[in-house]
Amino acid sequence: MRAVQLLLAALMLGGAGGYAWSMLASAPAAHPHLPKASMTAIAPSPEELPEEADKEWSAEASDNVQNAEAASRANVTE
View (tube, rainbow, N blue to C red):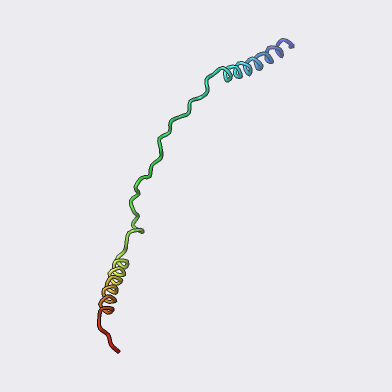
């Protein structure tokens, strides 16, 4: 019985010692070369595209700019 216990203890300590020795004697692990991250173009979703109401609003705004320029050039006397 005592021989079996001694054999089990020797196996466990031998395994732990061998593992420790292999870690001490091995070369350090090389750092992996990871490629640099880059940005990829993402197509706009339909929710982000301008709607017809947006186009009408822009057209009305540009018309207002032209009307304001014409009014400022006009000779208004009160």
